[in-house]
Every structure is written in C-alpha cells, then in structure tokens.
Image 1 (cartoon, rainbow, N blue to C red):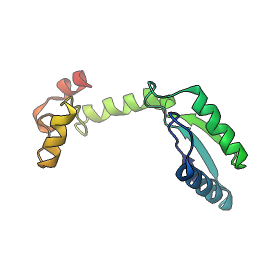
Image 2: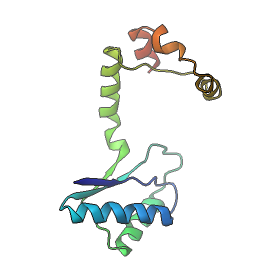
Image 3: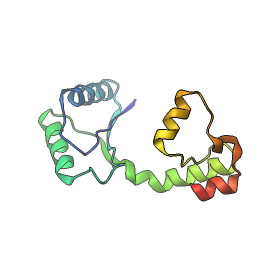
Image 4: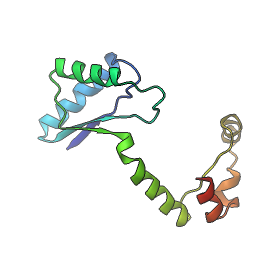
Amino acid sequence: MVTRFPPEPSGYLHIGHVKAAMLNYHYAKMYEGKMILRFDDTNPMNDKIEFVENILRDLATLEIKPDRIAYTSDYFDTTKEYMEKMIKLGLAYADDTPSDEMKLERDKGLESKYRSGATVEENLKRF
C-alpha cells in the first residue's frame, strides 16, 4: 500500500490536514506500505519555504515520518510529455477559453469549441 499526503505549501496545517496525514500514515504503516509526502507546489506565487519547513516540523511533532518527500513540480516535464502525446493521439485538447466564459459553457452543458473543432497541430500550439 502506498498513500500520499499532498499539502499545498501556501499556508499552515489545520486540523483537516492533520487528520488526513495521520490516516494516510497509519494505513501505510498498518499494511507495511509507504507514505509519500508530496508538496502540491503548482502555484509558485503562493508557495513559501516557510510553509514547507513548518509542515515538516508539524508532521515530525505528530511522529509522522514520510518514506519519501516529493514535489508536484518534480513531474512537470513528464506531465508535459504525456499531455503532448495525448494531444497527438487525439485523446486531449488545449482550451484557452477565459474562465468566466468556460464556466458559463460548462453550466449550460456546452462542449468546448476546441474539443472537436481544433486540429492536433492547433491544440499543440495552444498547449
């Protein structure tokens, strides 16, 4: 069993985080597995080393010792490669519709104009 605890390093842990961390750690140990602490650092504007350090300290206080520490950003290159592959296979598309317009389309159940109306080359360029 492998579990993960993925806090965003943009603030301090709260009781909900603690509960999730403790459950993930408990199940990993109970089943002789591993727990991965994966910092979800996808928004670098809000992420601070102060929060990473505090999260590590708080987990240590709770006697939670992750088997591995990773960062979502460690996988950006791999994610990009997979997305390009999926676009080339016609399994994904890129959409740059403004978020407010996208929400209206989604609420109305409308398909994105890029889903079937854009070529692979156009989607790759947009991506």
